[in-house]
Every structure is written in C-alpha cells, then in structure tokens.
Length: 210
Image 1 (cartoon, rainbow, N blue to C red):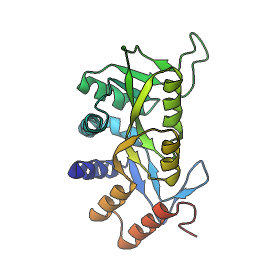
Image 2 (spheres, one colour):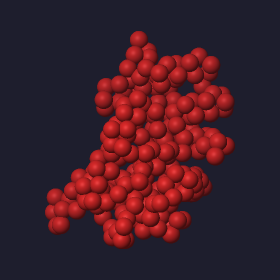
Image 3 (cartoon, one colour):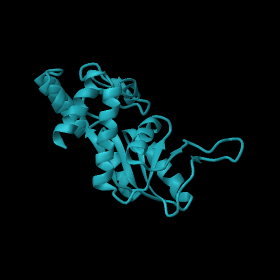
Image 4 (cartoon, one colour):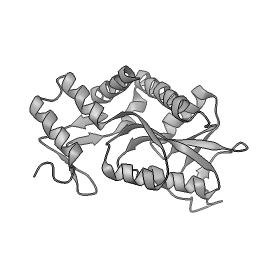
C-alpha cells in the first residue's frame, strides 16, 4: 500500500491537483496562511489517475470497512469517485447534499437504500472534516449507520483529528500531507529549505511563518 500511496501523491502533484508554495503561501477562507492548495476535482479529467484513485479507495474500503454495503458520495467532489467505486464493488450508491433541497420532498440524501444499510462515505479532501462530518450527521439522523469515511487526501490538521474523534467516525485516506511533502522532496519539486517550512506548517499551521 505504501508504494500505491506514493504513486497517488506523485499523480496529484503532477497534475497540480496539489500545489506546494511554502514561500508564497495561500490564504484559506479561514484566514490561515497555508503553503499548500488542493483541487482534487482535477483528478476526474485524467482517466488513468481517477481509476487508480478508485482502485485505492476500493482497497481502503475492503481493508477498513468490510461490512460496508452502500457507497455514499459527499456533494459535490466526492460524488464522481463514489460512483466509480460503487461500480467496481458492485454496491448501491447514494449521495449526500450539503443541505436539504428547498423544494419537492426536501431530501438531503439521494438514492435508495437496501435493508440494514451500512454506509461508507467518500470525499476528495479532508481539512477540518467539517463538511463530510455534516454528511455523516445527516445520514445518522435518518437512522442509518455510517461505518466510516474514505478520502483521497488529508491535511492532517489536529482539528480534523479532534472532530472525527468527537463524531466517533473512522477516517482512512489514500495519502496525506506528510507523505505528499516527502514525495515532492523526493521528486525535487521542493528544496531542503522548502521541506522544512512545509514541516513547520504541519506542526503549527497558525504560526509556522511568523
């Protein structure tokens, strides 16, 4: 699995789904300055990469959530990956809107569920976990079991660890920030000095460049 994770990290860097810029950090909506920007929506435009991602997610699900019998996509970025995974695993699929529809039946969860559903939710990116955990809550509010979350990438923020623990929800990802920056360094995309800055952000996201 390690080599597979390295390949996913390398692919995300290659197509600039992940951009590292430790000396010219990005400002996130939260106000935090980060040396990384991620747009995993790009992956759906690359057939080989999206297939590798789907195969990786299938492996993650079989290893960590073997009891799952429904694949759920988190709107919007998780939906295409969930669709491919559901097809590969021959399982039913649903998707979860960010909020209930404001017309019709007012649904937030779309799709039919089998008897005794056990859902694994798929998202593309985990920062603090807020959006996917709202989806988890929406599903659980319907009396349906969520066995966990699978995602492509996580920033490994401490807030995320706290939020998933408080929500009693397991998280497994294909790759993560630590693996990503080491892969970028290995491929000479970042210098030794840049790598140290990137590690400082991981250890202290709010004060790393002060």
